[in-house]
Image (cartoon, rainbow, N blue to C red; front, side):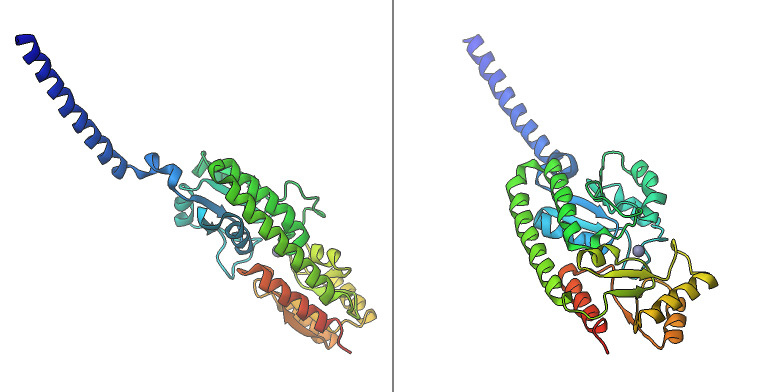
Length: 293
Ligand SMILES: [Zn+2]
């Protein structure tokens, strides 16, 4: 009788302990969601520039939360992140750099030391760049390669959702193909094949669509007098009527050269938040300007 009573008491105690432990664990889960619910969380992805955020959202859908290092209006060649951004970066799962951007070269070591668990991926890793020119996002054909790299990284970090990411990638690649065909059609009949631009952002774009970019700016610096006169002579010889510029870069030299040529300055956005829409606009603007009499 006694041993039965004893074991009943022990059983009851064990039951109470079990209930308490479940209670404890449940409490822990709500108190520490970062460690216990990580699998259900979105991937926290940082990118350098706005158009990359568009790419990651297209590819990651509602499984990703994207932050952009460089705010709208800043210049991708000399931007400096602030301490608030570095603090936010410490929570990131993934950083996708463009590759070859001067601000990335200057800051990447600091970014990594802020968050050693973060996967860092270079979106230019499978792309043959021209003289390390960073503007690979302005070629839809090169964006297809960047999309492969980004998608692979998302799957590496969140393999449970592989099918979801692969499906979104197929849709995005098809949209890029469609964009590429549209731009090809828009620019196929332009009269002038070479164009003048202040900041050399459109070289890959020009290569894809049978055009030639001539840049005023040299290695991120205002051109000297000699370079200015070389560009002006070239532009006169080629009867260039438009100087393309962007709101993020200095327009002083662009204005001076345009005035000298009797040309007009037209702005193109090299750092769009809505990639597809902007690239169509760029193609239409170029087609209009390069076909003017
Ligand atoms: Zn640039």
